[in-house]
Image (tube, rainbow, N blue to C red; front, side, top):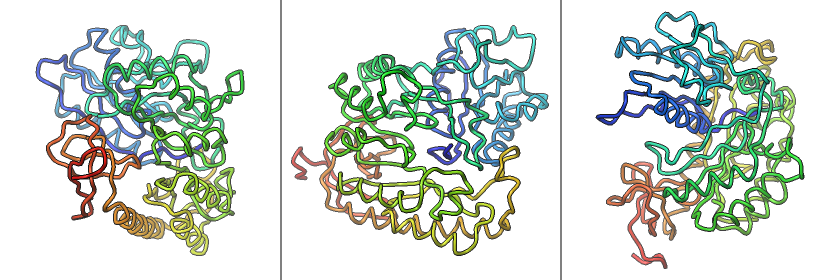
Amino acid sequence: MKARSTLPILQQRPMPEGEASIEVVTFGCRLNIVESEAMRSAARAAGERDLVIINSCAVTAGATRDAGRAVRRIARERPGAFIAVTGCAAQTEPQRFLAMPSVDRVIANDAKTLPETWAHLRYSDSVWIDAPPGGHRRRRAETPEGFEGHTRSFLQIQNGCDHSCTFCIIPRGRGPSRSSLPDAIIADARRAVAHGAAEIVLTGVDLTSWGHDLPGGLRLGGLVQALLDAVPDLARLRLSSLDCIEIDDDLLEAMAHEPRLMPHVHLSLQAGDDLILKRMKRRHSRAQAIELCARLRALRPDMALSADLIAGFPTESEAMFQNTLALVEDCGLASLHVFPFSPRPGTPAALMPAVHPEEVRERARRLRVAGDAAAARHRQARIGTKTLLLMERGGVGRMPDFTKVQLAGQQPGALVPALVTHEADGLLHGQCADVHGRP
């Protein structure tokens, strides 16, 4: 199991005036963003009002604590609100939230996007709302017509994980891997494009495992090509975090030859030392990671690579850490998500000999410095580039390789031809151009 594709972050949207007072506070990954919108939609359909949903993350101990802090803050700021907590932290540590007097319901991960959960929310006989009988079915969050506060559409195609990385608690929060059916994925993509999505991001807990549990042998690469063929009006398709050992040949072929598949790959690498990778129970070696990155850049010269890396994993020596630090250069990474090791109770890594917390923090700092330097080099290499930006709020847009560029005066969601002109204060700037890249 991999660490999540984003650092645990809080996403909170102000409520528009006149909207039923449903607030969703989201921590963690892109999959949680999808599920938050599905919950918001289901709660609206059920007629809910004065409701706050905390969609929690368990990827680090800090993320779980942050969810508890959010509950206490909401209780102070909105003392009459009905508070429901769900997500991976609620699934793995339900007693933490059940013990909080301000929490009205704690909802199992497998129940949180079901319409009946929200239709019967206040009529439950128990604070804990579990999934219906039947175990982990092929349930998925229905893709909303739009994602409030986002300029791209996130489409869940997979959930759960069958791996057993020693640092990760997410399989306990998400259950076994299960794939959404191709026809349902394509139907959701068509619906998103019909409602104006210029870019779709395929997301899941272990995205590259998609298809393992389905008949027919179709894998992620085949799904990507089928989706692009079936939805010709989709301008951009992007993938969330990938496991380097599971990337199939069809996906590599699509990356090489399909311009609508964006040239940005975020890899779940976690470490650059073979012994640490073995103790993590990762399934790739250092050499395999480096070889894959070289192959990706050869297939797609405009490819940008980013990665998750963990600093201070138990038993990590300075020499082992140096191997991880060198991976930034050896793989040609353009940016990093750095996770200081955070022991999760119930995982094997929590029982291994720990690195001193101060050393963990220092190694994380050094990794971030290396990541910042790599990102600066990447930005410099993009100056003078002719590109197509997908605009976001705040006058910034994203290049196909996900590099951020300042370009004022454009509507969020628009695709704008631009020329990258210079860098200032760590941000690239551009100006509008014609389709040939001329200002």
